[in-house]
Length: 370
Image 1: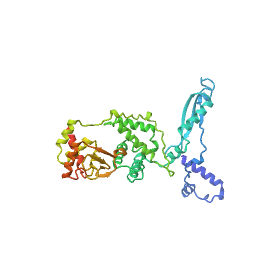
Image 2: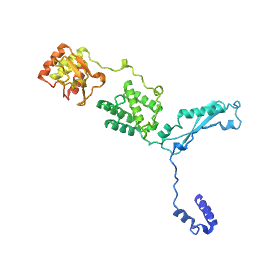
Image 3: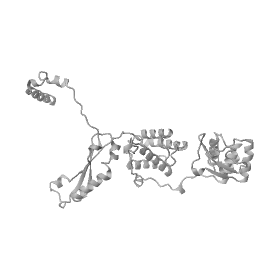
Image 4: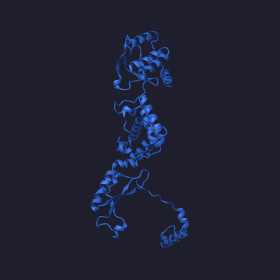
């Protein structure tokens, strides 16, 4: 047996050493059982100990032995180089083909390839040696930081609006089912291309605008992984053409609108204070949240001919208007102003604090379109 042979050799070596070995008087099996194995200690990967790699150019064995029919010096050249693998201590050896070129040209192409792939860059090293985080874990952390106000909007550098956060949550919920278990380091152009394809070929295909919005969320989640210096661990050069990201055509977007006849039906079917609210929405162009945010005496002039949009309401909470341009003064026609004035005299809170208005609005409109 192989095990017995190895013991016999050990015994012979130990016997030859004589009494200098303190364990020489013990059977070999006792020695092996009494001495614990010393674990292999490996130093962690360090970029400072690396001098960079130029790779190795080679040809196949047939060409190396001179048995090929290629012109002299123009045998197909290949290059080998090392690449770090996430979660593994050992590096992976990759090869690339350069075709029938000279040896010098192949060496030059290999150096250019190594630089282009970034296998020797600090960014790639930090990405591979960093913690192996999945998209699901990073997305959950990203949403948590947004809710806490520690991740701000890029334009205004202010906490994100509740409606924006709700939209991100909806996007992350969909994305978790597709790339949730993917390591963040693996989410690159190819994975993004597969994701966009999945969006287009889903049972209920997503609209172009939704696909673009969800991809922006993917980019933000990947970019949110930072090192101690605040630098991105997974810097990406996204190739939108390779990914197949659709171009949103504003003219082809779905923009539902009511006809004059449908508006008349909605207003006529509404009762009480809801009637004037629906009339204002159609006659002034107010967003539903802006209408809910109007307060008599503050946002409506005395003659009810001017509306001052200064706040909005979303999910029963006051917030700033959607954009800076949304802060505006709106003039309404005389008939609508008279109707508003008459209603405000009997119901001063006609606009403000109507939590069921949105649901009623959708119910009324669905009855008309059904």
